[in-house]
Image (tube, one colour):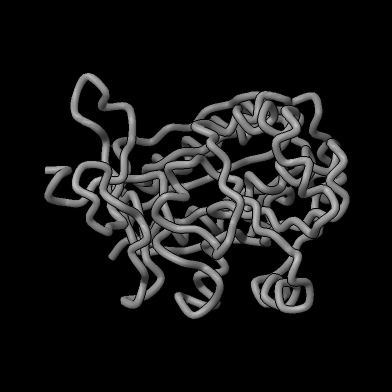
Length: 278
């Protein structure tokens, strides 16, 4: 039986390369695969393997004081859902392209949005009809699942968000409560700070992201569709009642399936039903 874990920690790291080497050795010792990014801002992890091995990895990682409070999200999967183990040190653990704009201390990202639990998000939406969800993911991810009425940008990569915010395209939201969200919460830690730096006055972030919201409410809340994930599963649903809001780019059939396009565009993704993808 296998499991995949997803977590991040924003905390100052004086020697990211040393953390990278330690994390690689820890994953290799436990037969894990996945992706880990380490930077002076912290760590971002998605790895999978046999359940006991994953538990050993999590225990060892949390023994490091800076990572002791990591919020771990668990899902079904295995090492086979990843092609390899990749552990890298970079300037950012989420590549918005503005490492010098983000300030991190022992409490996380400074001046970010107010973190809300899934229950608090629902309550805010109930009390404030003018509240708006702002999708912090790439556009392809939102095609198969998103919060009802969410603002979805045309971003193809995370780097696109700074330019989109600076363009003024979303300035009309500056007087409204804005709830940012993403898969596990890491992108919104940064995005909400970037929005506040640009004059968005009332910014919130869904704590734990879509993954935590789905754990709490399944398909009985404000979320619609499937959640895109960055491994061979491509998407996960929170119940057997999940809506298929995506449309196959070839035939228009409702689907939650995402696949790579054929060569030579095989590094690009599209929403394709299983028949068209095959």
